[in-house]
Image (cartoon, rainbow, N blue to C red; front, side, top):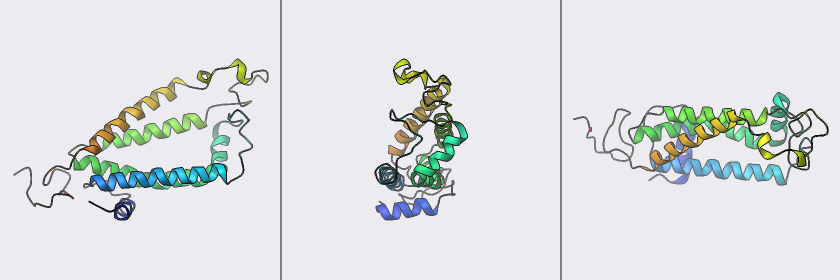
Length: 196
């Protein structure tokens, strides 16, 4: 079993290595690092940095489209940069983990794409007056939460959840004994191929 520091270092070092296999400890320690890092950075941005003036008192954005995306970098730059910089490492360690249990890595690609589509749909939600309408008389009391949810977002979120569940369940499994089509086992160094 890899120690936390070794697992994180290994995942970051092999960020663009989508071949081979990774142990459970590398996958789970790296995911714990991502969750802890994003949580700390987001809390720091919310509680330490100044409030975003483009968010109204109900928490709705007053900007839409590309302008909102640029604004997110200004006020949430640390967590946004952290998530984009660690995305290749997450994708590669997840693919290698699936390889370790004998599965193909393409579900991780779908997971990353669905996640980014969901992010784009949320950020680019057109909100002329902060409530999703160009009508200045539309107020929070006259609209519901579901007015902001597009069917495209719901579909991409459901695809994301389905593939995330698949990756998590596959990552819980133990490594295949010996070599498989993706390479030698990082856990069982027996030198015996399962294809013999």
